[in-house]
Structure formats: structure tokens, C-alpha cells
Image (cartoon, rainbow, N blue to C red; front, side, top):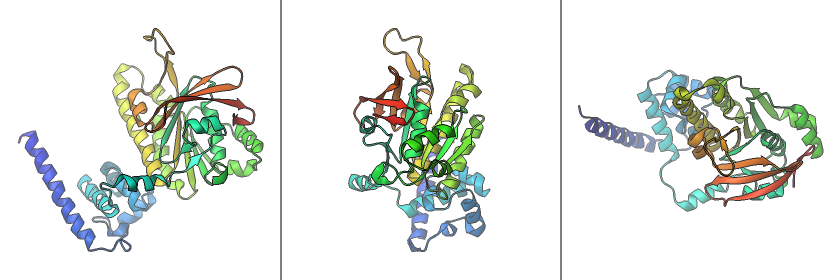
Length: 341
């Protein structure tokens, strides 16, 4: 059978399934409908979903059929039907720009500690967005992660979100002593601050992916408002070497970043990922520094900041890419007390 005919038949089948689901869902009250009411789930399936972290309609609607099929031990077709039902329940179709603007008003901002850097970021590191900081060693990438992990715990009026932080350490660079130092400089209780930061050490790229998949299990339980990955590409560079492994590396990295974006969207958390760099030998003029990950990482980052070291404790941040913020630079100070102007 020609490929075009198969595609048309599949599309027609999907449209019929969607119509049937709409009719089924119309008969059920929105306030009454639960996960158990989704087609093909039942009490046992709902229990498995909740155990895996899919405890509301949004988390199911934002998942893929492969993930759901593996969790519930069901076929892909049934998983697609469940996801379609959850999406129909949530009305995930087109919305007016005014409704989107209203949704964006739920976004929170985390202060970096520097007013100059906050202004560059449009008020701070925002939730529902992946913010990437890349630069050479000693440029301040990890320090921004440490500072944000402390600041997210502050009240909203002081630049925080009254929340906790999830920190995935891939390079063995997490230092609780540094967190304590920054907390003391802010007049906070270091012990309490450290108890609100949940750290996991990733030992390879597979482990890193698993940690992000498991993150949803504790985000709600521990009131997580910030996820930090320091750094995103270290293990991917080590596990996939040579041109022959570039394609599988990028595909895996792409899926990993999309999982991070789903966390940001579903749970309204901020995601900070630091990134390593390399020198581009083909560049004859200008700065040869290039971020690892290529276009995959560049397209996935909502806000992209290039950090570089200046004289002494001074650092320069340049906004490379954002969908709504103008390009620009900010100068900030990185000292024993953390980040400041």
C-alpha cells in the first residue's frame, strides 16, 4: 500500500478516535473526572501512574505514548488514547494571545543577586523556561547555580519563590560549603538552606536522564521551584566520542532537554542548565568559544547567556538568544559572598 494512503488512513483514524473521546468526555463532569475515568486506565492503572509521578491530567497530557506504555504496561495505541483523552479534558487546543498572556502572569522570577544581571534577564531567572549559562572554566557558571539555589528560598518580595531546589551534579563540583557561605552572606540560616537543596550526583549520561525522569516524583512533595543541572553536556561528551556517535548523542540529548522543558511547563519551575564550551579552530576572527551541543541545545534554551571572565572577580554576561529579550551585556561581581553588582 502506498505510503500516502497509509498516512491518510492513520490521520482519519485519529480524527475518529478524537471525536469519540470528545463525546465520552462530554458526558462526564469536569469536576468529577479523575485519572481512573480515563479510557483504558482503571484503578490499577491509575495507581501505577501515580506511583510513577503522573498524578494529574497535565502530567499525562504532556507525556509521550512510549513513556506511558512502559509505565502502565500497555500498548502504544492504548497509551495514545489515554493521552488524547487527558488533552481533550484540559482543552489543549488553540487559545487567544490574551489567554496566553494571562497564563504567563503565573511565571515567577528568581533573583541572581545582581541587579544588572537581573535586568539582562528581564527581571531574573524565570519559571517555565530553560535558562542556559555557558562559558569557559572559572567564568561563574556553577556559582550562578549555587546563588540561585539559595535565592529561590527567599520570599517573593526579596527575589525568591519560597521554594526548594533540585540540583543535579554531573562534574562533582557541588560544594555545600559554598552554599553555606552564600547563605550566611544573605543573613539566612545555613542549615535550613542546605536542607532545602536536594542534590544528586549523576555518574553517566544514562544516570543523568534517569534523575530527570525521577525529578517529577519529588517536585510537588518538596515544593521544588528550581532545577539546576551542572553541567548538561559533560557526560554526553564523555559517553559519546567521535563523529560516528554524534547522531545518537544529539538524539539522546534532545530527548533529555525536552524532558526538562516538560518539567518546567507542568510544574511551573525554573530550569538552569550550565554548559561546557570548546574552541572553534575554523574561526579566524573574533571569539572562538562555542557552546557544546550544537543547534539542539541552542534551539531548546529559552534564554541563552554567555559568561566570560574579566579582571579580578568581575564577570561579563552576554545575552545571546531569547524570544523576547534584547541582546545586551551585564557586568557583575563574583566574590566570597556570592553574586552582586
